[in-house]
Image 1 (tube, rainbow, N blue to C red):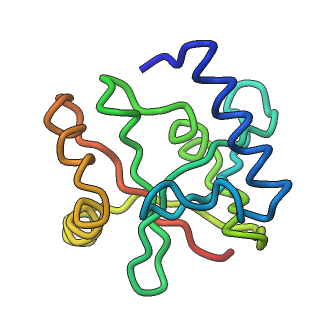
Image 2: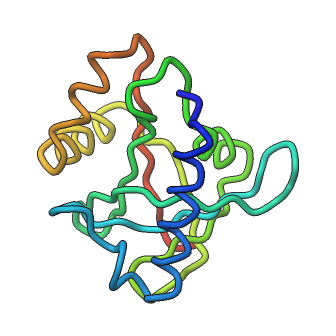
Length: 140
């Protein structure tokens, strides 16, 4: 799903407010915890930051590359596939981390946990033919 100019501005504003307040504002949308994920652009090499909902499963931080059920993976996912070293800010704490795509039984387990946390993901999967990637972000 290609974000409109207004959507891109809202995403930037969300990230800026999150950063300025250490996540006190923008760190939750309803019951969903938000994080800031910074990737390296796969073609530009520039830092790209996006706010995302996170599901915590034990020690694992799980991100869902749904892009609202779009036909293509979101840019942040394509960036981390090209360069899995990322920065993740959770609240006021920012850490260098490594991202990987869950597969097999682990993907199934984490997908169930993410859908239990945010039922909207099931609708997004129904909307697209691609299998929505499940990303695990772990300390380097």
